[in-house]
Image 1 (cartoon, rainbow, N blue to C red):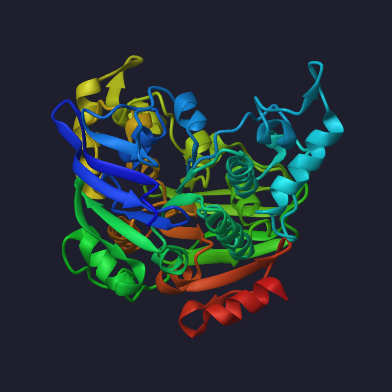
Image 2: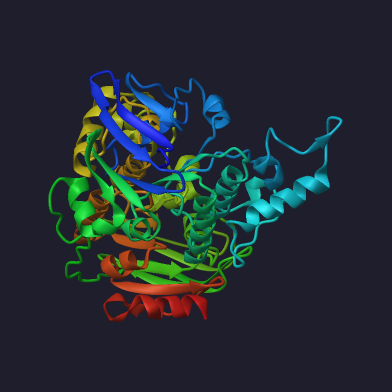
Length: 506
């Protein structure tokens, strides 16, 4: 008989009056993938912080291979063989991929780094997770990588550590294409065969069903269910996470498209997109599908004025106080000007661009419209907090209150925070780049209902998503982007996932 690799026995953690964990217990066997499930705010991140040495439990016992395990720092946890890969990759942007992969453990001779050997080791580490369609060079700077590439580097770094006994993956596929997900799952198969245990956190239950051997469900900081993955179903897991049977996630009411709010003609960026054209009408949701790297994010950033435009025309007809505003520009105005015209962008990179981590929830939500909360250059915190409290309730943001720092929220709640800022600003055209990435099932339903409410008010939504069921479920029309070229629009109701994938790949 082989004992468990990890045992968590009645671990509790409180932050003031908030009980993040209440007597949580679980065990993970060697060579097992154990899914840790729960809605945003259920306590998953707190438990992972304790295991990774970034936080301490108030009570309870941890053991690793039968030995009591109580890391006081992340370095102690890593030394014990615990490696964690966060949803937002923690990498040094100014260093190369190779330097990041072996930071602190570079191959050296007499104090001099052996660069050739470092590159060889890095290529071997990257080969375990990298797809042919999204190559990464060990010599590239991390600052040059896309979010998906940075995530793969972080996972490769964890797998490259020779003493890794427990690998914790927090939403590891949130930024990955299907090909990259397949490569990652292949790598995890090798990890399991080597006896390494994996704790896998994900809101994508189809992936969990495919990769996990067992599971634990947390709700409000407590255990509510555990067992073998083969003995349950995604629907049962959703019910356990929510504490009730959820209605159909995708709500798609009848929408009547109105006048054109945004038109793009022949838009080309420095590299991507290439001659993209679209027409977005008030009261509709237009989806942009495509593989990672196809140019979908670049398209949204070019429209919003963040990426330089080489050629083409962007025409905005958003409403401000009942007056139509139009803008036509090949170079493109600034993001500030676009915001004034009624456009708002939700970035796919919420850590770097979506949320100001050190500011409070109230400051984040009101950041782009401070003039509404004071006069003579002074901002009324009372008015900020009153407005913020309404958004916290409406979006179901799990937090201690408007004064709490954004960095203390879970990833999904930070995403809601970024969306709340656009809604608070009352933009007319919402450019949403992966709006539900890292968000649990119930919260996704809340986001979709907010989108439906926005379209009923006459707002227009341009949405990028890598999750095809989502695009087909919530969009009215879909355009597929392939290598920077945007295809013709098609009604979502008549499309299948297979048809969209064929257009994106062939």
